[in-house]
Length: 245
Image (cartoon, rainbow, N blue to C red):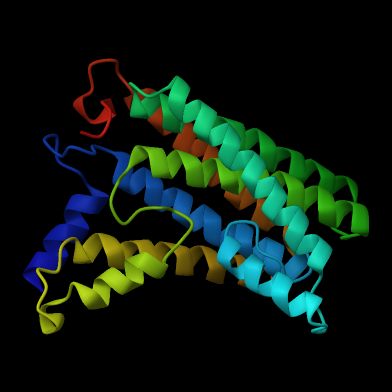
């Protein structure tokens, strides 16, 4: 238990000698944003994910088999948008290969713009999700999440992919003491799961009460705060900003 609590504290409040510096709490913030965004896509945009592509592949299979309440087109559009975002994230990763802080700052700034567009579109439609609004939000949110996933992959902070939890949950069990493992980073892994849960729960609560704009606005705020904070912390000589060895 002591090791777990120490890992939680080191993740939330990194010490100066930590190799990843402020990246863990910043990526946890993005994980919360992911939960909010996927709540929007699944609950308001027709049972589709914009961050969880495993779910979309499964949904596509269900839809093509004739399952009710699922759209093959929505799944395909979401996956295509995600791939576009991942491609853009890969290009940013190459451009900022020597400074992880600049990569995270720039990727989250672009995400902020993309989510801002969805907020404006939803506001113009007065929160009504017509077919045009649905696919506009799927495209822009999908690009934003693909970009985030690619950037997080390049940053290389263990157990903080910000969009996928399968391997994190597997690691919690497979690397645990009962399984004979060394149980590395248990606090970080649990925080990652809790961050996604918190975002999804908050997003669902808001959406079920008709607050689409507020949900998108909260995701936008988290992205903007992450971008600004990263900018303020990204000095050229910061050790944590160097590429992962």
